[in-house]
Length: 176
Image 1 (cartoon, rainbow, N blue to C red):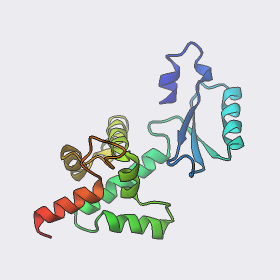
Image 2: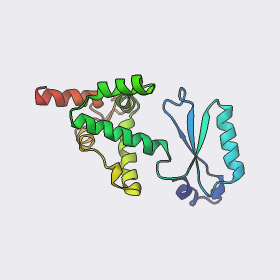
Image 3: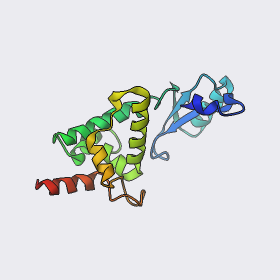
């Protein structure tokens, strides 16, 4: 949380929190997390600066994960659970959120292409600690991570691949 970080500063009123959306050169949204410690002037300066860059700042209360990380992580976790249940694979999930919800890329495309699986995993652990069991990491996500699938190897050289590769391996192992 921004307030926790700010408390370590000599002047905590100077720290504002922003959450830029990926890819930042395409996505206009920037969450501005407003802690109780930030000054009115710093807050106004940050929002003004973002607007001058052509961004769309949306002010939210400083809280674990702000708004969109918490909101999207519940969707991502449910998408992973639906794969576990055999409802649909990553490609079908991606097509549904792009065609049905108008997202610019699918959930699994985002995680695979951006190195976002590690970010999701770490955020989910933090949210579980701060907000409770509704942020449990799905068992399939645990298995994917343990098997070394952590997104695009070009972004994360230690990775064996992303969700699409993991799913293909899992399907071949089951003979499906």
